[in-house]
Length: 263
Image (tube, rainbow, N blue to C red; front, top):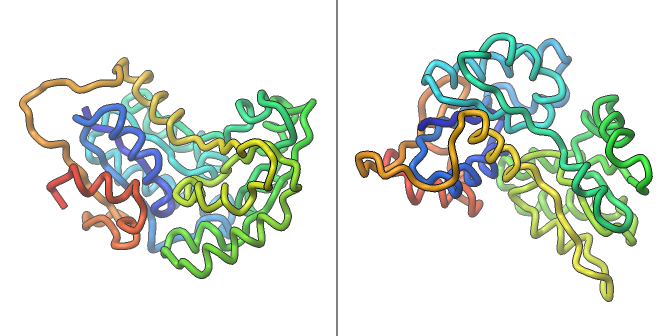
């Protein structure tokens, strides 16, 4: 089994680690675009073109499924990617976990990039799944870039700025950018209020990993196969290279490296 994942940068690590946990035997293809990131400030047309190129680079490795592990690309480019690759390769997009967050008790905050915050796409999800819930959209300028480059000072500063915009009574935070899942516990620590119940964070990594397996009729577990170690192919703007050094600062990146001797 081979699962490909794509993103502008290392935000795909969370979903890749989730796939690895569900299917330790699966080969992974990680396709990103360091030459073109960030995607958020680009026009929809430019973003779509770059996302399609990243998807096609992954598709050249003939995966069984492709996960678009990027909220921004899912908003703007998912129909184009699906038109190009399906039905030969099932394509799974990433949707902010607004529905499960709204199902819990209490107000909800959605942390997302400025390009996604307030977008018709996100507003549509709020209206559809959280119409009766108090929802605050929180833009997080610079946080994805800080995570991408493992800039500890910038991560602290951008999380603190977003936390200052988050109402103190929120009971759940939707992580509306895949990069944010890599620093989820730091976000929790910044938003959690004393004497209130534990804050619930809602990411998308586990859901998209499970959906990818469903799309190809696979179940969690390990296929005994030939006993070979799972492979990891890393594509940086189409070039096959090693996992970026910054990825190894996160637990998800270290998990992938630890069980992928191809590195």
